[in-house]
Length: 365
Image (cartoon, rainbow, N blue to C red; front, side):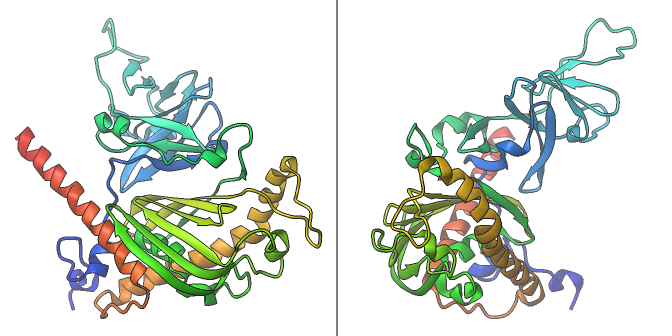
């Protein structure tokens, strides 16, 4: 077998749905979470990658966020190697300065020229919401037509407590989406028991959304179960949705989460989780934890419960990625119909994006 044959096929060469899903990117004409706000201090710059595209995300001294193509037009160095001065991003090599719109605002040495040439790199729309930085990597004119998901519980004076949690895993984004909504893997989490005894009761695709529901026992872990008021909250059913390109869940309007994936390449994904609770109770007592203390409780929970739980998922999907790369031509065997439903939407949306790109190329030609 040649090296080309030994590698998983590309999207156009894929022979079945699973192979196609594992080769897709994600439609760039959506808002994507790219970083936690707290991780980018004013006056700093970081590199983010959306489907093999390097972008410099920088935060001006006034705290505002901006994103530009991650290359200096002079010698093509990554601008993320530079530094932020005031509201400008400065290349580390020759000190070329770029403003928030990506325009070259200053060149230190012009060698006799009176002004800097009119040059610019691409800039990207950026927003901040729910403690996350969001970027629109697609056609800028389409950004106003797309909305970041509305999460009313996380806004206003009575917003629920939520502490974002993120990590990068060496696996394709479709594997991450499959994992979070496929409850047939409860065995993996037998130590923490976030859900047990899952019975699929709904799987319905409506447009770009896949709606599903399980009869399942939620939050029955030895420690986590002590914080959930099972007498007041119906924790025997969970509703979920793959709302392309996002994923969410709801347990009795009391326990909810969103997952936002950032596709980096065919084997790398950044995952941003928002877990939020209307209330939790003090263990062994029928008393709710005060609202002012909930954020502190969630910070601890992320570190000692939710983080380790998600680490098990990360190990599993990374192992799945390695297995797929070795055995991509093995016959697909899938017991949970939600996985095929997700993959069908993912593949269709990627085809639609490629078709738009092809049409745009014909128009430009």
